[in-house]
Length: 314
Ligand code: UDP
Ligand code: MG
Image (cartoon, rainbow, N blue to C red; front, side):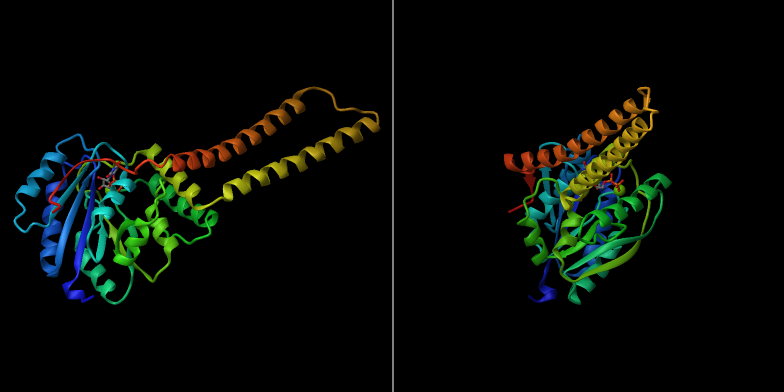
């Protein structure tokens, strides 16, 4: 493959991004016109219900170079699935994922391509600092990555998002991974290949609000941990063993007290013990349930997303 004749796909997931989308398009096209390579921009509207869809239609109509393509999903499927839909339709030799809100600067794309030309199969953005994000988000993000690295047996680089360039080889393997609970940055880390961390400053959202409220973030984190590790099951077992040992201590204590003639009286201790062990059991059952639920949704084998319509694809 001759790099200069290569084809670059840029995937932009959009969920209710009416306030930024035009600006994003302007900045993206300005960058892409400079790199002098064949390009396509695939906007994936993830069930937007504001003006995003009509703005995207307009962008497509005014696109004289024929580089804009749009996939409209039938409802909101979530960021990771929206990216997956984009990846499925991308034709590029290199595929770039970038958020619509300009938190990831499009101006870094040429550097990513340069690194790709040097032979890296993946160039992922790693945040040096993150402006405009609450202390709470920074704190939880930090500990989330630490926990994830501890629990899963693969190293998922800290402070990375989905802003990245992937070579066609990587994209093809990702496409062959049909799992439903998708944590793309983890899947790419799991693949191996030679990867380059491109440090950058993550700026504030250009406009609009984050589409990742707290609970969506919690769900995302649980998905990430459970789809990369079975350690929580082992922890449940460990918790079981520990509580058995503790209860053995309790039994020995009660027997000794009885033998020396001062038997343990009262129900407080018993009540606490029952509550504690029921807690351990319920948590363990919950953990097992999470894994069973996941197996269930995998076996249903539904498609990952449903497309309402496509624009710009030949
Ligand atoms: N997004 C999406 N579907 C969703 C939520 C978000 O396609 O259900 C898109 C969103 O439009 C943006 C990107 O995913 O382009 C990242 O979302 P956001 O900026 O809200 O997340 P944050 O940067 O706050 O983590
Ligand atoms: Mg954002």
